[in-house]
Length: 409
Ligand code: ARG
Image (cartoon, rainbow, N blue to C red; front, side, top):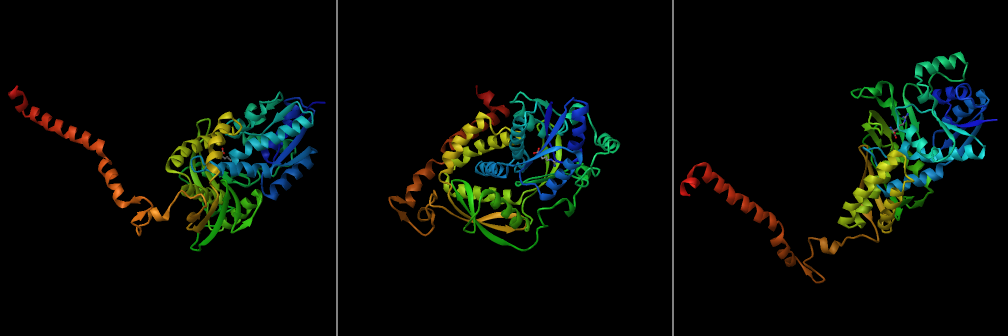
């Protein structure tokens, strides 16, 4: 008996995939798999009910911890792509690996997803799955299905779908971000109302300060209280979300080259990224910070591509690990006007001397103010010479233009 593992959400796309995998691809059995990366409980209920109604063998794999760890790796890399902290992108390899695990355990010969041929997720899933010998199947893409066709087919087959669940928008939620796209949002000029948001309240005039503690670049505590990674993220989503922190509205350049209008909510991610960067600002040297931007940007790009297991990422993390050894300390964040702003920071590794920087001290150790005089004399020296040369030749050119230069020769 041949079986195929299907990434299953209970939505329209993955539900129509079930009979199609049998009819069109000849599988005897479809095994549904949902991977828990922190979706709301209602999504699991929907998936389970639908799986039940379809008579599907159904598995749920809890990958929240692994996912939260990866989110924290992304904080160490200050990772965002066009303002988006990569929630969907980072979750995909975690989900793909978990489904592959079930598929192998259950002796499946195929593995399938319900992604269309337009998005990023097909690429992220398949990069992992094509590492195996399983037949990779993408029914929606391969059969060129449209939403309308799927709805008709579902009605005809009496499939248990409530005509495109989740309302008008296409929503993807996990611990790190909630993304909203489609429908009216496809018009880049359309200004969405509050109804697209579920994690954030509209920013008001209230403010609050919290302290976030990092150990070697990894967040470990809020206001002195330790949390495990999953709880820490959940807690911050609640607290920062209440102040309207972490909303992004962008024209996202997808991997295939399409631009897509995306709206995101990510209160915890925004807060942690802001705090982490502030702590790096205290601890790392100027040249480390400057070079790390290049490293971070590359990390974020691989994250967006769903390729966090590429050797390049391991190499980038060699640099990141080395710098993060000192990124230990506490940052005070103020939620204000929809922002999570760092308003204080402290670390035992601060590359900072109040004594040296202060306006109130003249001589510290062997360094006096006067020592800067020599530096000041040389600062900009080369450009002075160059500009003098330019000016001298300009005078020459003007003389020539007046015909006086030539007359003299
Ligand atoms: N464009 C984002 C990404 O590729 C998120 C897409 C989320 N999907 C959705 N149906 N809202 O990472």
